Image (cartoon, rainbow, N blue to C red; front, side):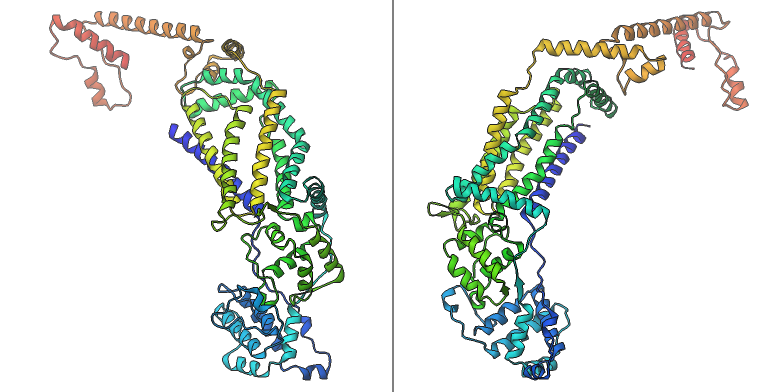
Length: 601
């Protein structure tokens, strides 16, 4: 039974960790499935002149675009669109040993190199074929490449080019945008343009706004703490018994206590359930300042991210982002290069930006906050190459570990008996004190360092709030006399309840569980001992009567009782009187055996 309880505790802790992991992964976001959409309508040729200008037919151009998409999503992916844009600028990304680490080598637009474009189509066809997609045969591919011209390349690029306009999100997107504007105002005017300072002040504001939920939780904890002596009285009543019926009976009595006192243990969960979506929403706002804080649409955010990470050969910035979660790292690298970014983005061949979209993005770039503290950029993701930022995950672990230890002193702790229950509770607490901070530290290493600072600071603010609440609305404390008084009160209620039962069978059903007898309880011990003494006295009388009957038999031995289950021959032998009798001096011994046999029968 103890092993089962320990296993249950471990399973509960594992479940809690799994739920936290699921929530954090949901907050962090998932990488989108690779897709490369294109517009088939772009391959329409409306005149004979336009038809004659192209070397490939409409169906052939469509198939080339489909091959590009298949290669983009293949296991060994090849971004044919990027390579084709690079070929249109005069660079060959399919060349062996190609590298684009030095962006200064690709600033010039040299114009289309048709041989490079053919090399891109050939490699895309091979990649798509290996992935199981429908591709050109060798003969078909040779024919297509022979007829490919500049007009075909331009039409392919136009089919993959996406239009970016200013778009408005839905209701929830707008609501988060309002909160993001508040964070933007705090950062610009109270945080002096520093995003690190701004989100720390933002965390304080959020904790103040969530104060009503904290008060509700504290009141619930106080109510539960006032019931602690009575709950301990019930637990002590069943102390030392770990069998399932006893545990069920104990839980039933505790639930009845809660009902009598109008207390629900689940009432404290409601504030937590309300706070959870708020915390997740705040995470999205903080992690994606370009969208929520600077007010750019999701399509503009995606376009800017693609532009920043595209190869310089294709006209991108060639950034290597350590995290694909949010836009903090992107903005921290773009900060201070607003004019150059907008000019380059307008010429980027992936997208066709509307004038409104470019104007909106230009305004947002000018308001990019400062992610640095001194010369250290906290918008970057912690890594061993930038070992100073690795101190942020360490700070997060220490913060969560200490806050969980200290916070437990300010919060109500469930009532437990000394012994196994206390050891198990201590084991669970120790496990949670290590695993939860470790999980938080792991995720801190996958997001920009400023997020780790935000989590750590919020933890300290929450700890301070718990300390203040524990002083303003302290939990009640009890003396040993209070616990004894609660035991007497609960014993009186139990005795009163037992007296209301209708039969002795019902009394035994209530008071006896597994190996529990009435004499085990103070309120029924006297009655249990009296009944036990009466049963022992009755047993002695029966033995004495049996011995007296045995002495009156002619041969000093009682006849065996007839067994209806035996056959007739067995019944006859059982009724015979033995021919040889025991000596007179052995009669007392025989009488004792006869008495025992009779009683057993």
